[in-house]
Image 1: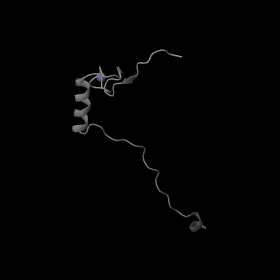
Image 2: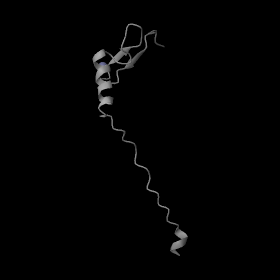
Image 3: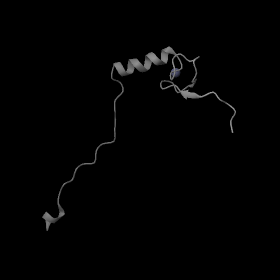
Image 4: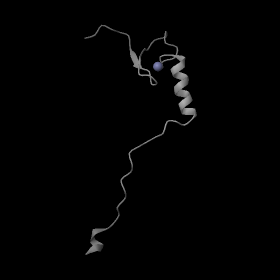
Length: 66
Ligand SMILES: [Zn+2]
């Protein structure tokens, strides 16, 4: 078991480990810079949501082909 009680998270911008404590004013970001970068990307809509394409709805009824 680890004795470490310090929780860390990954900075969403640069993936750096960030200590999750009151010392880290910008958590979950490692710094104000990363926070602004992330915010800026959202503001400029660079975050494209690329979900899986939906299954094409083939509604053909096989019984009609008989
Ligand atoms: Zn960062």
